[in-house]
Each structure stands twice: as C-alpha cells, then as structure tokens.
Length: 120
Image (cartoon, rainbow, N blue to C red; front, top):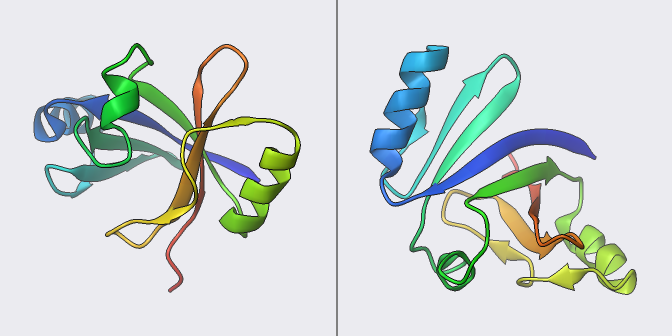
C-alpha cells in the first residue's frame, strides 16, 4: 500500500486547482469534475463536491479532504477491511477516469480512499 495523495472536495475545482498550480508550480490534468496536480511525487486531487459518490456524505458533516492510498487489488482490499468491521461508505466503483475505488471511515470519521489506478 502506498500513500499517494490528498483530495480536496470543492464547489469550484478549477479555482482551487489554479491556486495549487500557482503555489506549487506545474499544470494539473483533468476538468471541472476531477483534476490532479503532481508535486514532488505527491498528488493534489480536486473533486467536485456534487458527484454521485460524494454528495450525500459531504453535505452531512464530513470533512472536505480525503487521504488516498493505491493498492494492487481494490476489491481484495475492500473485502479485507470489511472483514475487520471498518465502516464502508460505498462498494468498489470504476470511475470515468479509469480508477476503481471505494471509501471508508476511520474511527474518528475521517475518510480514506483506496484505489487501483487504471490499467495501462
């Protein structure tokens, strides 16, 4: 497992990614729904607040940041964590940008995202 990024949930992806582009340099890839900026091996992800996966949770008291981890097999990781009694927020889903992921909460309510990047 590898810590890969921090994701910011925002009402304005383009505005927030522009700020981080100016602060850290570089050019983000993506659009007004999902963008990513690589800075020294770490990614800043910018996600629109009102997506099918996140809208309900983020309008009901959760933080607007997500800690993300890449795993080899997201479905196996889901099964492993579910067996440990971890509070799942959704089942593994394949997104339009090709990644497959699921989200869960730690005991304090922080969101964790586990993802398998798209196959090249």
